[in-house]
Amino acid sequence: MRTFTTFLTEQKNLHLEHLEDELFNRGEAGVNEAIAFLKSLSEMLKGNAKSPVNVTVKWDGAPAVFAGTNPENGKFFVATKSLFNKTPKINYTNADIDRNHSGGLADKLKVALANLKGLGIKGVLQGDMLYTTGDLSSQTIDGESMLTFTPNTITYAVPSNSGLASKINSSQMGIVFHTTYSGDTIENLKASFGADVSGLRKTNKVWYQDADYRDVSGRATMTAKQERDIQNYIKGTERIVKGSKAALKKIVNSPLKDLIKIYLNQNVRAGIDKGTAAGLAAFLGSRFDTKISSLKTDKARERVQQEKDDLMKELKRNERSLDGIFTAHYYLAQAKMLILKKLQALNTMPSFIKTDSGYKVTNPEGFVAIDRTGKAVKLVDRMEFSRANFNVAKDWTK
Image (cartoon, rainbow, N blue to C red):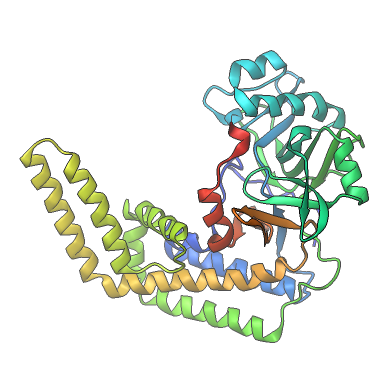
């Protein structure tokens, strides 16, 4: 597996989809692509070095920071995702940061501007900020003194007496780079998943690394039973999709697709790992009722009530197909989880989620799988990380 991937994509690296959601995003084509990812990842975990997929670790950093040289004027800059706004927010100076941003975000960007320039970045890199000096604290976790930082939802912990803790303590900031951009203008920058940090200058002001997944221990090897389980989930998905093509095509080509994804995220918040036709109907019915109660005239209320009644009848007629499609989505998620658990076997930095009663051990946020065409999907335990992420305040935005 290569340590740097030069897969160019036509879009900016602003949003990655969950592997299983490709079923609703692109229907049968999305399912085929999700299955191809699952098979390639299985091959990789069986020790097949020819596997056509690369994996990067999804660190739970925030905010996202872009840094490098503006190809249009040769000046060093830092930015957030607003770099790709219609009117880009590009920061060359602290004054630019004060004009474009505020609060804790502006403070972090000023630290980035002061310290990332010294790395000698060629082109433009995107990374997730892990900490600045004010984010570091000492905690006792399971009886051990730890240096900790919580950039977003996950708390990362390093033994206080370790060499890594010493490096972190002496730095001004930490960042994990994961994406490279190339192009002759900001507007036409193209994302390449992966970041080659080997050529960056060494400095004690910035603790940095790339996001490449490394299984140096061999602990992430797929067993024969796990491989069979994944194949069974894949076969079950293929069987369901084969018999539900018409219903799936109708979903993909309608606004219902986005509503289903909102419904699934609501399920995640509630700790529910499988959608159903009845659950979707209840979710949509509640949204209709909220809309109806906000309308001012009887005529408008009657019109929307009729829309609700028509949709409920349509959902009832297609209940069996919808339940099958939700089962296929569940199968893809379960196959993903088998692979995710193996990838999580190598956890290079202990991570926790803070609870009311202390710290709960957790896994990394997830991983990103990239194929040879540049298509990427995220592999995240939605029942653990996504649920926590929906409900945890983001301290860096304050």
